[in-house]
Image 1: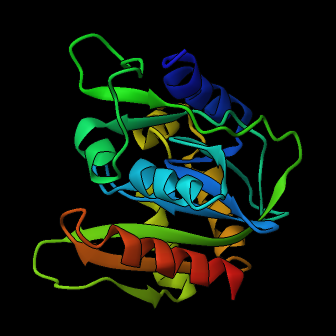
Image 2 (image 1 turned 180 degrees about the vertical axis):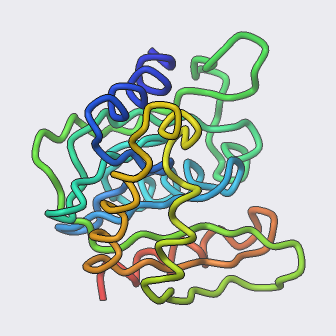
Length: 207
Protein backbone atom coordinates (compact mmCIF):
# COMPACT_ATOMS: atom_id res chain seq x y z
CA UNK A 1 0.00 0.00 0.00
CA UNK A 2 2.82 2.42 0.86
CA UNK A 3 4.41 1.86 -2.55
CA UNK A 4 1.09 2.16 -4.40
CA UNK A 5 0.16 5.46 -2.73
CA UNK A 6 3.69 6.82 -3.12
CA UNK A 7 6.04 6.14 -6.03
CA UNK A 8 3.47 4.26 -8.14
CA UNK A 9 0.88 7.03 -7.83
CA UNK A 10 3.57 9.63 -8.50
CA UNK A 11 4.67 7.86 -11.67
CA UNK A 12 1.07 7.71 -12.91
CA UNK A 13 0.78 11.46 -12.33
CA UNK A 14 3.90 12.06 -14.42
CA UNK A 15 2.56 9.82 -17.17
CA UNK A 16 -0.71 11.75 -17.26
CA UNK A 17 0.97 15.14 -16.80
CA UNK A 18 -1.13 16.07 -13.77
CA UNK A 19 0.75 18.18 -11.26
CA UNK A 20 1.76 16.24 -8.11
CA UNK A 21 3.11 18.34 -5.24
CA UNK A 22 5.08 16.65 -2.48
CA UNK A 23 2.82 17.66 0.35
CA UNK A 24 -0.23 17.09 2.50
CA UNK A 25 -3.62 18.65 1.80
CA UNK A 26 -6.21 19.31 4.49
CA UNK A 27 -9.78 20.55 4.13
CA UNK A 28 -10.48 23.40 6.54
CA UNK A 29 -14.04 24.61 6.26
CA UNK A 30 -14.98 24.49 2.59
CA UNK A 31 -11.46 24.89 1.17
CA UNK A 32 -8.12 23.13 1.20
CA UNK A 33 -4.61 24.12 2.17
CA UNK A 34 -1.59 22.24 0.83
CA UNK A 35 1.50 21.98 3.02
CA UNK A 36 4.78 21.39 1.21
CA UNK A 37 8.36 21.26 2.39
CA UNK A 38 11.51 19.21 2.41
CA UNK A 39 11.55 15.78 4.05
CA UNK A 40 11.27 16.31 7.79
CA UNK A 41 9.75 19.78 7.48
CA UNK A 42 6.64 18.69 9.36
CA UNK A 43 4.05 18.19 6.63
CA UNK A 44 2.47 15.02 8.05
CA UNK A 45 2.92 16.24 11.63
CA UNK A 46 1.07 19.47 10.89
CA UNK A 47 -1.61 17.52 9.03
CA UNK A 48 -2.10 15.24 12.05
CA UNK A 49 -2.37 18.25 14.37
CA UNK A 50 -5.01 19.79 12.10
CA UNK A 51 -6.93 16.50 12.06
CA UNK A 52 -6.93 16.51 15.86
CA UNK A 53 -8.63 19.91 15.65
CA UNK A 54 -11.43 18.43 13.58
CA UNK A 55 -10.27 19.16 10.04
CA UNK A 56 -10.31 16.58 7.23
CA UNK A 57 -7.26 15.02 5.62
CA UNK A 58 -7.55 14.92 1.82
CA UNK A 59 -4.15 13.38 1.06
CA UNK A 60 -0.62 13.06 2.38
CA UNK A 61 2.73 12.86 0.59
CA UNK A 62 1.23 13.47 -2.88
CA UNK A 63 -1.25 16.28 -3.51
CA UNK A 64 -2.56 16.22 -7.07
CA UNK A 65 -3.45 19.75 -8.21
CA UNK A 66 -5.64 20.94 -11.05
CA UNK A 67 -3.73 24.15 -11.78
CA UNK A 68 -6.39 25.57 -14.10
CA UNK A 69 -9.29 25.16 -11.67
CA UNK A 70 -7.09 25.63 -8.56
CA UNK A 71 -8.43 22.46 -6.98
CA UNK A 72 -7.05 19.49 -5.08
CA UNK A 73 -8.04 16.29 -6.85
CA UNK A 74 -9.49 13.34 -4.90
CA UNK A 75 -6.84 11.10 -3.35
CA UNK A 76 -6.34 8.68 -0.48
CA UNK A 77 -6.48 10.06 3.11
CA UNK A 78 -3.63 7.97 4.49
CA UNK A 79 -1.15 9.51 6.94
CA UNK A 80 2.24 8.33 8.19
CA UNK A 81 3.89 9.67 11.36
CA UNK A 82 7.36 9.34 12.82
CA UNK A 83 7.64 8.23 16.44
CA UNK A 84 8.88 11.62 17.73
CA UNK A 85 6.03 13.47 16.00
CA UNK A 86 3.45 11.10 17.47
CA UNK A 87 5.01 11.51 20.92
CA UNK A 88 4.87 15.32 20.64
CA UNK A 89 1.10 15.10 20.08
CA UNK A 90 0.49 12.45 22.76
CA UNK A 91 -0.42 9.87 20.13
CA UNK A 92 0.19 6.32 21.33
CA UNK A 93 1.89 4.13 18.73
CA UNK A 94 1.70 0.76 20.51
CA UNK A 95 -1.32 -0.35 18.50
CA UNK A 96 -0.38 1.36 15.22
CA UNK A 97 1.04 -0.54 12.27
CA UNK A 98 4.55 0.31 11.18
CA UNK A 99 5.08 1.60 7.66
CA UNK A 100 7.99 -0.80 7.30
CA UNK A 101 9.67 -3.30 9.60
CA UNK A 102 12.50 -1.69 11.54
CA UNK A 103 11.31 1.86 10.78
CA UNK A 104 9.85 3.97 13.59
CA UNK A 105 7.17 5.38 11.33
CA UNK A 106 3.53 4.45 11.69
CA UNK A 107 0.25 4.47 9.80
CA UNK A 108 -1.99 6.93 11.65
CA UNK A 109 -5.78 6.48 11.32
CA UNK A 110 -7.28 9.80 10.30
CA UNK A 111 -10.98 9.04 10.45
CA UNK A 112 -11.30 10.65 7.02
CA UNK A 113 -13.31 9.00 4.27
CA UNK A 114 -12.29 9.13 0.63
CA UNK A 115 -13.43 12.49 -0.72
CA UNK A 116 -14.56 11.99 -4.31
CA UNK A 117 -15.14 15.71 -4.96
CA UNK A 118 -12.35 18.11 -5.98
CA UNK A 119 -11.74 20.73 -3.27
CA UNK A 120 -10.96 24.41 -3.95
CA UNK A 121 -7.38 25.24 -3.02
CA UNK A 122 -7.26 28.27 -0.73
CA UNK A 123 -3.49 28.46 -0.16
CA UNK A 124 -0.18 26.66 -0.47
CA UNK A 125 2.11 26.93 2.52
CA UNK A 126 5.79 26.02 2.46
CA UNK A 127 6.99 24.75 5.84
CA UNK A 128 10.54 25.93 6.51
CA UNK A 129 12.12 24.87 9.83
CA UNK A 130 14.97 27.19 10.85
CA UNK A 131 17.50 26.61 13.62
CA UNK A 132 18.04 30.35 14.16
CA UNK A 133 14.44 31.52 14.68
CA UNK A 134 12.72 31.71 18.06
CA UNK A 135 9.07 31.86 16.96
CA UNK A 136 6.85 30.98 14.03
CA UNK A 137 6.06 33.58 11.39
CA UNK A 138 4.15 33.53 8.09
CA UNK A 139 5.06 35.58 5.04
CA UNK A 140 3.54 35.81 1.56
CA UNK A 141 5.54 35.27 -1.63
CA UNK A 142 5.24 37.24 -4.82
CA UNK A 143 4.39 35.21 -7.93
CA UNK A 144 7.97 34.93 -9.20
CA UNK A 145 9.29 33.80 -5.82
CA UNK A 146 6.35 31.42 -5.40
CA UNK A 147 7.07 29.80 -8.76
CA UNK A 148 10.76 29.40 -7.93
CA UNK A 149 10.16 28.00 -4.46
CA UNK A 150 7.43 25.56 -5.50
CA UNK A 151 9.38 23.88 -8.31
CA UNK A 152 11.55 21.81 -5.92
CA UNK A 153 8.36 20.48 -4.31
CA UNK A 154 7.11 18.63 -7.37
CA UNK A 155 6.88 15.00 -6.28
CA UNK A 156 9.93 13.06 -7.50
CA UNK A 157 11.04 16.01 -9.62
CA UNK A 158 13.93 14.07 -11.14
CA UNK A 159 11.41 11.56 -12.45
CA UNK A 160 9.44 14.40 -14.03
CA UNK A 161 12.63 15.46 -15.79
CA UNK A 162 13.24 11.92 -17.06
CA UNK A 163 9.67 11.61 -18.33
CA UNK A 164 9.88 14.97 -20.08
CA UNK A 165 7.01 16.70 -18.29
CA UNK A 166 8.90 19.33 -16.29
CA UNK A 167 8.16 22.05 -18.86
CA UNK A 168 4.46 21.20 -18.63
CA UNK A 169 4.63 21.39 -14.85
CA UNK A 170 6.40 24.76 -15.03
CA UNK A 171 3.47 26.11 -17.04
CA UNK A 172 0.98 24.57 -14.62
CA UNK A 173 2.79 26.08 -11.64
CA UNK A 174 2.67 29.46 -13.36
CA UNK A 175 -1.10 29.14 -13.71
CA UNK A 176 -1.41 27.99 -10.11
CA UNK A 177 0.53 30.84 -8.47
CA UNK A 178 -1.43 33.39 -10.50
CA UNK A 179 -4.61 32.45 -8.59
CA UNK A 180 -3.55 30.71 -5.36
CA UNK A 181 -1.55 32.52 -2.64
CA UNK A 182 1.75 30.88 -1.74
CA UNK A 183 3.22 31.52 1.70
CA UNK A 184 6.12 30.42 3.86
CA UNK A 185 6.03 29.57 7.54
CA UNK A 186 9.42 29.88 9.18
CA UNK A 187 9.43 28.05 12.49
CA UNK A 188 11.92 26.76 15.08
CA UNK A 189 13.57 23.50 14.06
CA UNK A 190 11.67 21.43 16.64
CA UNK A 191 8.08 20.66 17.58
CA UNK A 192 7.81 23.08 20.52
CA UNK A 193 5.89 25.64 18.45
CA UNK A 194 3.53 23.23 16.69
CA UNK A 195 0.40 24.91 18.07
CA UNK A 196 1.49 28.32 16.77
CA UNK A 197 2.13 26.82 13.33
CA UNK A 198 -1.33 25.25 13.28
CA UNK A 199 -2.89 28.54 14.36
CA UNK A 200 -1.23 30.31 11.45
CA UNK A 201 -2.46 27.68 9.00
CA UNK A 202 -6.03 27.82 10.28
CA UNK A 203 -6.07 31.61 10.20
CA UNK A 204 -4.82 31.64 6.61
CA UNK A 205 -7.66 29.46 5.37
CA UNK A 206 -10.50 30.71 7.58
CA UNK A 207 -9.83 34.45 7.36
